[in-house]
Image (cartoon, rainbow, N blue to C red; front, side):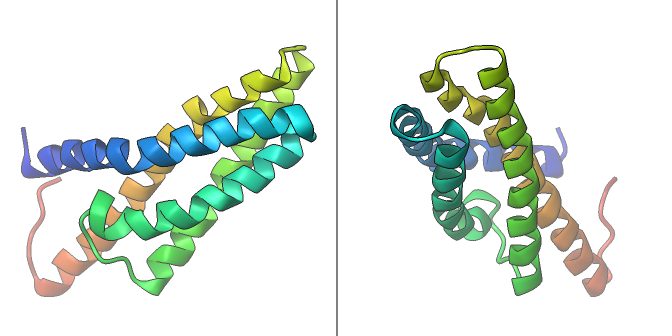
Amino acid sequence: MTESGRSAWAAAGRFVLAGGFNTAVTGAALAGLSLLIDPAVAYALVFVGGIGLSTLLADRFVYAVKMSRGDRVTYALMYVAVFVVGLVCVQAMRGFGWPSYTSGGVVLVTAPLTFLGGLIITRRRGAKAADDRGDKRET
């Protein structure tokens, strides 16, 4: 396995630790709030709350890099895209007539998407930094 492959697996493990907690809390909050308010509104509120913790942990802990301001903006924009995908999933669940509490399952779609998006963002930045030093990276 290449060093890049090993570091991706290590990042995945750290994502499970950091993101797993965030996902469990936001998934439970979504399921509970969905019983009190419209599931789409609950999803929006919970998702925005989860972005804060995720952004704090993403760079140095999960991906083991220091993200620049531009990387953080890109990361937040990626979250907006994932939010839209998740909202479509929540609306589809409602359209299928599933109980409101099942909307918490949307994290099974959004969690992998945010991990892969963050990995792409931080690897792209890492590739730029390596190229700036004149290092050659394996592809």
